[in-house]
Image (tube, rainbow, N blue to C red; front, side, top):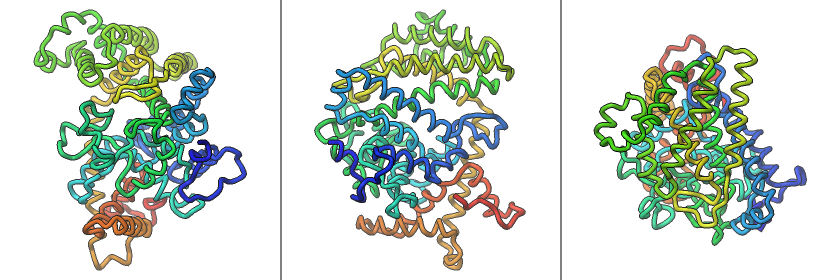
Length: 498
């Protein structure tokens, strides 16, 4: 089984050092320019424009890798659990660490905002029915685009590590059959987005061009995990991603002074004080008074019941709100962050306590619900992560000033894609295209031609543009548009340097 999991797409033998082929994968990922690029890609707000020391996609990925390894080592310390995990396909700390490092390689400039904009442009302007998805782009980079591996294309990662990158092991529209979005209870991420019916799954981990890689990576796990279930190692990486996201963004925005004690206290305390009354309110009453304390948290409780009734318990939800209130409102936010040693110690203690609690809450399920995985968080910690994420969404992501900034970024990406499309279709400029853009279009043309699709030229142009834009940092996207719009005063820039 180990040799099958360690098989590479190329069939080349593993290098003699390091001894583990999975550690070799980790080293290949860390050495990739796509990994280094993540230092310039937004996590929540762009560090280049905020003036703040905030997490970027690189520091986030390092934390996910660290947490994933910690979860794996804790689970494997129990021999009975280790034996059960082996029967589910195996768990190797090197695999989950490598997957944690690589899991965000496909994130485009400006974080999740950039992902949504590129997806819409890919589908509606560029004619790509599988659009853009950060997880699918990660697999494409690891298997196809990155040329710094030993075989010319991709990093030639082992099957286990590639499978661990597949948080959503299906395409957007047609694999596997029947497609999981049509299931009575679709797996998490497989359902269609309500704002875009008919477009396929909201989340997916593979484009049609990398489908053979998915099949080969998942082959060692056939019969051990269901086709639409994550492998154990993918589940560990995904759990670590949730934990990191729940904790470190709160740290960032406490340091920045964005998370205000009074507003967070009013929301959490208001719900705790009026939980019974709020539970009896109609949906119209909640939405009509959503700015009143407690209403947004009550709306979250109802959404969780609607989406994940198999795990939601009101007692656990209440206990989670109480714990977050005690740790965050009465603890971390009770004193404004002033940059002092004491303030930094408070942040570190908050992070350490929550990390220990959530990593310690990872459990193994022999027969998980379709919306769960073989490794997930225990019920109480699951609710706590949901409440921590709510605080981040309600008091950071929903801020009007952030929305204003993101609308500008969306406009920038739209204009950039349109400008590149015009350049690619200008027959007088064909010989002066950026070499990397030209190469990516050529690569996509070969792929679509091999698939026998209609109009491979049109699809290749669209996919090449998406691949090119998605490989830029925030600053490179801004610089490139400055050049294309004539605003740049310098002839030579780093806009095209990856």
